[in-house]
Amino acid sequence: MNDNPRFDRLRRVLAQPFIRATLALVIILCLGALFNAEGSFFRWDAHRDMLRHISRYGILACGMTLVIITGGIDLAVGSVLGLVAVTSALFMIHWGWSPLVAVPLCLLVGLACGVTSGTLISRFRVQPFIATLAMMVFARGVAKYISGGRKISQGVETADGFVYLDFPGFFNFLNARILGDNVAVVTLVFLACAVGAGLLLARFRPGRYMYAVGGNEEAARLSGVAVAFTKTLAYAMSGLFAAIAGICQAAQETQGDPEAGGSYELTAIAIVVIGGTNLMGGRGSMALTLVGALTIGYLEKILSLNAVGEAGRLMLTGFIIVAAVLFQRSKR
Image (cartoon, rainbow, N blue to C red; front, side):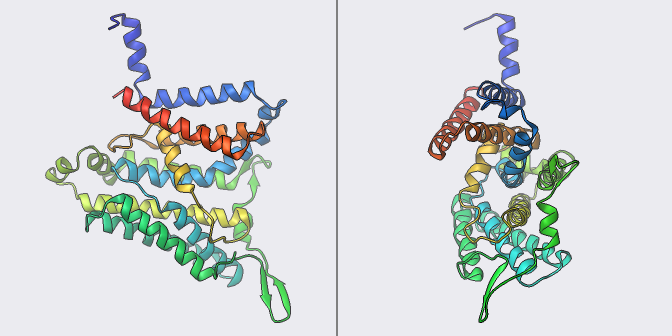
């Protein structure tokens, strides 16, 4: 046992989740500077594109953070994203609905999926893994049913051949870049979602209740916390954020793909875990999730710039997730 005061202070500093998460991000950035692909890493467009790419996953991670803080997990977010991508494309591309009508309806679809999962978990005591796995399968099935198993795009087959419909202006807006072509709109949507979730956790009673439920559910119940409502709210918010990500997905891909969002839930969980939010519940923050999103985003960008294949990326990401969890446990 080392009694050196400096060593003890360093250990206490490293025990803080935000410090550990930031240190991981700094290491990734140093690797990017070292393996910069002939200077590509130092160009702003590489960082802009990274932020644009990670934004959909980051939006999912905002909802996943709320769920994990309550001690749960949501495997359905990728499928809900795919379902909302299809419905938003159907409403705004094929049916020509105004976004003032289509967007609220799409958000309601995601919210309904989240509330259903949350109700199964909180009221009927179904395990989160089972309830959200069932919702994952169900939402994917609905997406394929309403789309006929085909992508909802501008091209529509008629008796006279293919007709190409107008692309919605709202989708063009979401897919645009602003501030001198330097920032993608979807990145700002991600930041808005992160700020909203962060305020819920830090400033409002339901957010504090989420920490209490994740820390000790029975103690929270005895203290008067509405445990069932709090859990349902966390999953409802996760479904809502998945719907927002689904609309962004449709805009970025210029179509609604019923297969969209496959395995996205794994990336969202990876962002939350690498950020340092405790998988057992009760601890975490949106600041940690933002750091986790940047870490995953830069890791993927660096590997892409250096032409590392998908197999290598997946293996390295898996290794980092395990390392992050083990590091959390070593500091408890």
